[in-house]
Image (cartoon, rainbow, N blue to C red; front, top):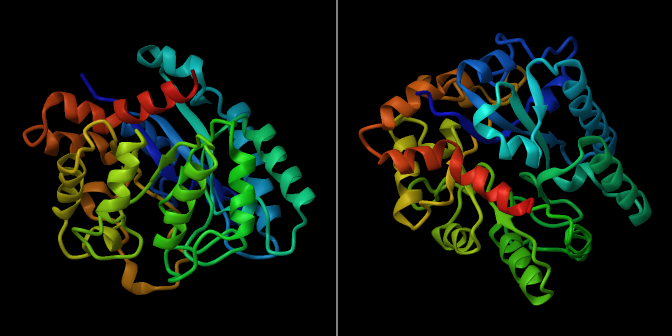
Amino acid sequence: MKIPILDMHCDLLSYLARIPNANAYSKEDIACAIPFLQEGNVRAQILAIYTDVKPESMDLAKRQAEIFSDLLSKSEQDVAYLDSGFIESWEQQKRIGIKASVENAAGIGNEEASWQEIYSQFDFILEKVKSLAYISLTHHTENRFGGGNYTEGIGLKDDGKKLLDYMAGKNIPVDLSHTSDLLAEGILNHIDSNSLGIPVIASHSNFRELWNHPRNLTDEFAKEIIHREGIIGVNFLRAFLDPEVPERLFDHIFHGFQIGGEKSICFGADYFYTKDFKDPDRFPFYFPLVENAGKYPSLLKSLEDKLSAENLEGLAFRNALEFYRKLQR
């Protein structure tokens, strides 16, 4: 029996919003195209609403939220909304369950937006996509909410605290995948000191203990997520694994289990549109073993003799599925 997949992060929406004549079914363009997801037995996929820190970021986020809504109506033969009903009838599902997330809260509020505009934007996105799988306050760089993973010494700003306060009670996890270490610390402290009850995850992050990169989690933060019963999605990008060693993907997966993440480790592949990427050193972005979402069955096959059946199933879908099942109760 084929094991289904629940993947925590891909950038199909930003591709559809930015690239002329983009097509969710184009296997030539993007590694998470719907046919690849079907070939890989991906039963659920989180679709990120991604923006840079730019004046037009809110407009771009709005467009992606609308595209998500259109996908549900125009591709209903292939995709369905990943809600509690989908989760409860998981084994019977034939379509791909999709849920949106926000990668970089600049899409909720650019640097000039008033708080009334931010609240309005937040509510518009939520209305369009129905619910959010998680929100990342930052991407690589600094914004009004805090410091991104390529910024040092910038933590949680007052606007970041205000956004967390607005998230509280909405069953939306906060994502540490793109925070500076200081921002991650600030988020955890603000949640705890104000009893906000916001779940904490890392949707698409690897481990700094194995590959020293600011995009990767320290063991301290990884263990904190595990302690809070969150989830950690292993990222497939070469740059965050070890660009020269394909097998390092396995090492990151095993490390997640070794630090106590048997119920937390999952997949966060991070497939995105790469054809307009400026840095040639990043090509190829993925090792052949995981170069597109259709490769999941062979990846799981490679892990069969390295993980127990229970842990393999947990990694593939169950850990993430149980996280969202509990969240939606």
